Length: 201
Image (cartoon, rainbow, N blue to C red; front, side):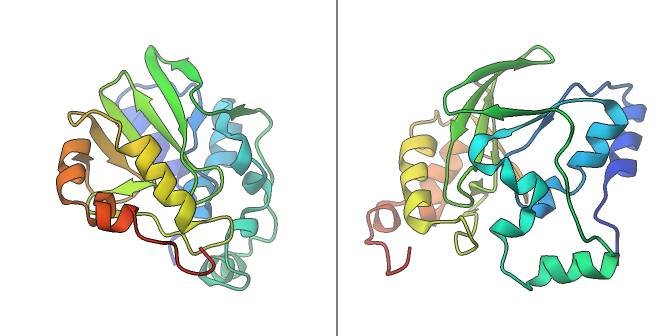
């Protein structure tokens, strides 16, 4: 089983391009997006930026995962029994503007995949969408802290108003554009967005 700690792979990319990290920008608190945050922060002494609603998941990622599920089983096989958040964590809020490495970044709180999922518009050219929006799909909403109803609201209020030319960099899968998703993504069409939530959503 491959170790989910990606620090070595990240270091190789940074060294290859002579880059110096200044922060970790976290879209949400799911373990596949946060496992390497602590070792990365320790290695480079950089702050971790995450929406306030998901901060607790840095130290306790199982709060947003099914008890005894696949992630917990993988961690047990790796001998990982506890987590802790990095030394310096900065909480982000909706519509906050930040500057990192000369990039103008606007935070959008977009709950649904998790309660604290966030998207980041970069220089009004790119959208780091995390697991809110993929090419042709959206993130799952059935895990703890997820909500299909909240996801619909986020898609309507946070994704649809964005300009078509924005290049989308999702948390999984290929890049796309807002325009392409607006026209072809089934989850951005009226029949989904205006459908009544099922019981329990």
